[in-house]
Length: 151
Image (cartoon, rainbow, N blue to C red):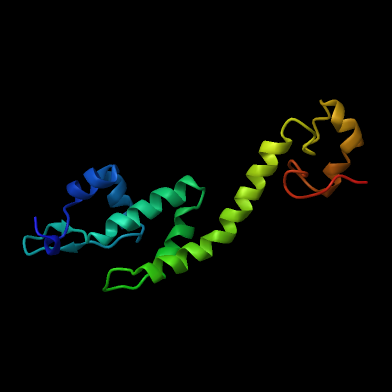
């Protein structure tokens, strides 16, 4: 198949590892936009391989489809996105990824100690969170969420 003939949905599914139904779902959500050939068959640009790969990776990192769509909507229509286009998108995701990395690092480094969740089950809790003072700052594991134990 020539590159300009586009990819069938089956070829796209095979290359991405996605089910055809998932590709159709992403199409229905406006994340990808196939075109029709002279025979009325749905065809995809090769650039859609990158879009679908981006969707898969972004979902693995916890981004929602509306968040992903908002980013993909910034890509140009009518032409294959360039490296500069993708760089712009990656920069907008950078802050969110950096925040997640910070949280994951805190989790990795502090899970064996008091995290301010209110369980008071560890000896360290009596020192860092006596009578669940962290609970006054709100719900959840306050110290993993960025709050500091009272001095």
